[in-house]
Structures are given as structure tokens and as C-alpha cells.
Image 1 (spheres, rainbow, N blue to C red):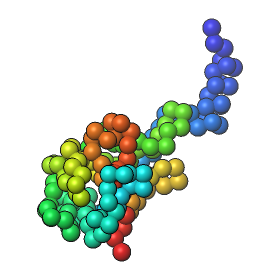
Image 2 (cartoon, rainbow, N blue to C red):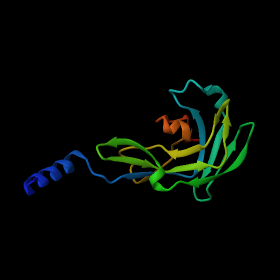
Image 3 (cartoon, one colour):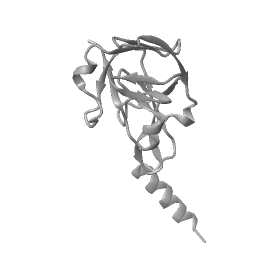
Image 4 (cartoon, helix red, strand yellow):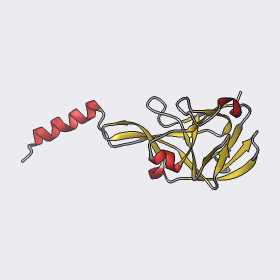
Length: 156
């Protein structure tokens, strides 16, 4: 049987070591982003991405591809928070990254993303804030714990 003193010690220890069960969130800002190759991806020719942009409007739930052979406006669906990507795990917590599903497949520079996902890029230090950086990936990549293959950075 666990004594009340043991419970207090466990709770105090959890409080000091960060084993809380709450999750902080990072949100993606609307804006025009340059599409860049993930540094670890060998699938993408960085030069082919020069001038490729994506204009994301999180309020209108749209994303417009610009500078590709297939420029178009795509509908986004904001996923329920329980389905957001999570990064920076610590004991029983992680940082949730606002995640959007794209209605149709995306092909960029020879890479096809089926069931594309756009999500914020963040971790500890920017929790509960809105950031101007993100990722463009696919559901399959994310199930394998892979970011990318495309990073989204504010366009100059």
C-alpha cells in the first residue's frame, strides 16, 4: 500500500522533473512561405525549389501554390487538436503543432505527397505562440516520424 508521504514525494518529483501531462501548442501564422528542402532529404533538388512559394491563410483555410507547374488554391482542414503533430517529448508531455490536412495530393519537383499535411514548426520555448515556420509533409511520412521533405520559411 502506498503511503500519503510516498504520493507527495512522487507528485513533487514529477513537478520538478517535468512529468506533467499537459501539452502546449504552437500555431502556424498566415503568410507567404518559401518552400525549401529539408536538410536531411535526398529526394529534393534545392535549386528546383527556387521561387516556389505557398501562401497559407489559416483563417480562410486555404493554401495557394505559387511558382510551380501546378499553381492552384487548395482547401485546408484544421485537424482536431488531438490529431496535431507532436514534437519535443518530455516524460508525459509534448508540444502540439497546429496541423492542417490538404484536400488533394501535391506534386513538387518530382515528389508526390499523398494526404499532405501542413503544420507549424516549434518546440519548447515557443509553446502557446504563433510561428512563421512550418513543414509540408505527408501522412505516410509522419507515421514514420519523418518531417518534410519540405520546410516552410517566411518568404523574403
